[in-house]
Amino acid sequence: MKRALRIVLAAAAGLCFYGSFPPLGWWPLAIVGVALLVGVIEGRGLWSAFGLGFLAGMAFFVPLFDWVTIASGTWVAQAGLAVPEALFLAVTAAIWSGLMRGRYTGNTGYGRAISFAVTFAALEQLRAAWPFGGMPWGLLGFSQVDSPLLRLAPWGSVSLVTATAVAIGVLLEWALRHGVRVRLIRGFISLGSALAVLVATMFIPLSTASDSYITVGYAQGIVPREGLSWADQAYAVTRNLAAASDTITPGSIDVLLWPESAADRDPRTDADVATVVNGVVARLKAPVLFGTQRFYSDYRYNDYVVWQSGGVIEGVYSKQHPVPFGEYMPMRAFLRTITSAVDQVTTDMRAGTRPATLSVTTASGPVVFATPICFEVAITGIVSEAVRDGAQIIVVPTNNASFGTSSESAQQFNMTRFRAVEQGRTAIQVSTVGISGIVEPNGVVTHRTEAWTEAAGTARVGLRSGLTFATRYSQQIQIFFYAVGGMCAAAALVLAARHRVATQSKKKRSAAPRRRARTKGTR
Image (cartoon, rainbow, N blue to C red; front, side):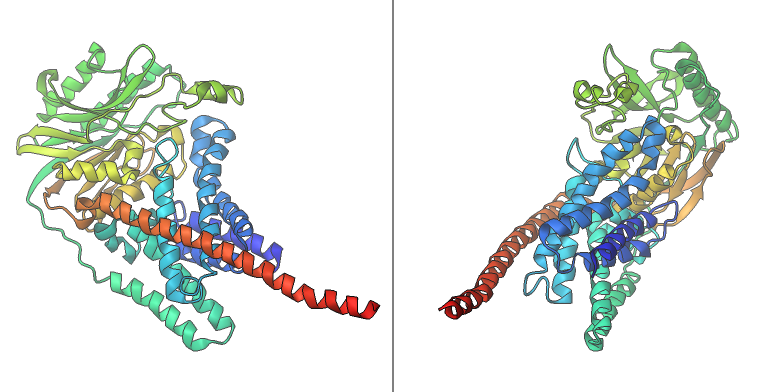
């Protein structure tokens, strides 16, 4: 395959990964992207595969993170996030090229499918955890919420869904490779195996049984964009949410859900905002959960608060995983020498230490909510820990106002949908500007708002206490993929080294007769 064609196909692989996520959101493209990436690194050395993988990664992550430029006002932030994420895909491609040298991992379709799939999932886990706490946005499993593979989520979380999608892509490439070489039987077997996996997942049952029910209300109040001061805008957001909540009938709900940043002027210290919140609670005769900020002299916390009648604070959850470069600025002094944009984050956010749960007293009895705030829905450990700690339902409060009309909110809603199935819980995403929606544990979306539209609604939702396999053993699943992925990476290095030594020895042997022949001729 010519170099130029490999470059084009590597970029196409990355664009396919991107296309599997919103705004296009066509899940089969993730599988096609894997097949293309495997094809272009066939026969390449480690460094060549590394370069092609990096190119695919940039074609994937640069457009995926378009909302970073919208939020930060500079392309530097978008590029700065895309480059390290692309490096993980580059390392994955390099490991794959090494594994291709192996008898069982590279020269059989099933060996490739298993080893490549586990390696890809392990590297995804790593980039979701490191550096700076990781960036799990764009995990391939999150693109499969409309795929039959989503039914694997309760059994192996994002890693199993990602690995299965990758395995299918590898088998697809293997089938096409043998089809081109007229090895039709092998090609049909590989293609049939890929299709069989997809079909088999359709028959995995998803539980829908509930222990009990409550009625929730939710409001999406819109963030004004008239260029108000921070304080005036924050107050307007709270009043807009209160106005949207006025459409809900008093006494008809057990709890009202507001989004992250619903009251950034903290009603615990701001009497005007407290009056607005108390008025909503008194009218609806139900507690309200909402996001606010707790400011100190040079730092802040992102809180989700349970506000009962009379201003009683029943519980507070502080976000455990602030977003680097968005909610706090690592290496601020160094980065300021590169761009002044670092000072757009004026007050760094600190991490909370409690699990993401809130116990709420309602008219129907106490309810424990899992409350991962915004980006935390992408972090498996935070959500699984909350459910293991007794959460009966998941609410994802988020503020998407900084991302304009990008696909950030839709990408996040995909993660909320994934968590509902993975955790076996009803999941509710509630946003300042949308998308807000409710997802059942079988993946069915029962409510969904439009972005940048004021909306409110109510829903009868189930509470559940059973734990899925993925919830109960989330840590063990991650350890498994790290362990097997690490072994595959070590094997790849050994195989690549052996291939290099063998190639050099072959060159020496082939050169030796020519030297002897030249010597004999001169005599």
